[in-house]
Amino acid sequence: MTEDLQKVLEALKYDKRMAEWYLRRGLITKEELKKHLDSLPDLASETAHFDLEEEEEEIGNGAAH
Image 1 (cartoon, rainbow, N blue to C red):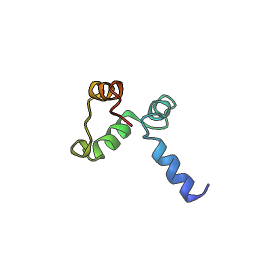
Image 2: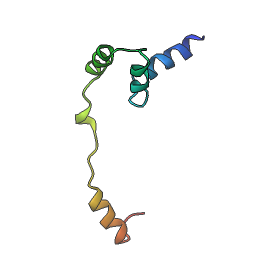
Image 3: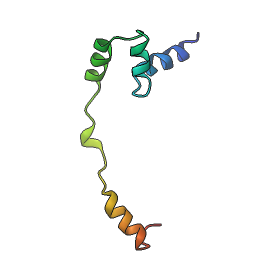
Image 4: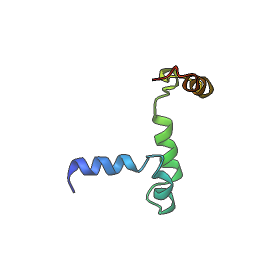
């Protein structure tokens, strides 16, 4: 297996969509997953907030492109 593929597969172990699958098969432990999640940076301050209701009103009024 190439090194690049190995890195991708390693990253997928902790992907939100794959972690449960890996846990059920015993390929990772809950402790490993928790350690990985705890190591991730908190990016909440870098998010963009928007109001879906406001967006829907703009679309209904023809304001959105």
